[in-house]
Image (cartoon, rainbow, N blue to C red; front, side):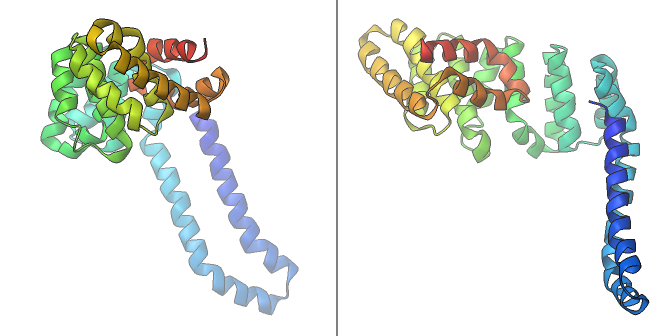
Length: 272
């Protein structure tokens, strides 16, 4: 993506739109009406100018950031963001999230953990806002017991849009730790109540393909829950193309990288 080109095109569009609003009525209508019209839209012109200059300021203030993103120079981007966030203390939602994602692109789980500790001290709310990134960093760094504790401690206080995923990753962490009973409880709950087709399907997949085989005494119950969840998902997403389209909404979420293999396997399992 060419950030510079986007900036030029958007700026030009703002200026052209402003020019059309200001000058076309002055040319078309009488001078008396044009004067009245100009006085009427003066507040709008001032507001539009403020928006334009704010946009220009934002672009030039972040020009280096856009340049590094465009080049996909992740090591240089991490150094730049570390200077702004950690050294200068600019713990904003946008910068913290971008730095955490950049660490994960470089498979630097330790960097994410260090960022989390510093963010928790500076602005604890940002840890909750990025709970999936900080949690999956533990999984990718093979700190499974840490992931279990992290997700478990945040299940109840997670924001609504993250809550079911926090529950799911807690179950996934338990599964990685071979705690099949506890993982089965989490996935059974989600397979029955989740309104998210991806979470429902992933939970049903693990119940069917792994947990039911490990818990012989509960095999039939788990398979029944999995089968019912599978049926609900296929009513919503009848074709594998529908599944892949729904999964594609996670493509911009770095936490989904930890489970990309299982997303593909779940799709094949659903529609085999």
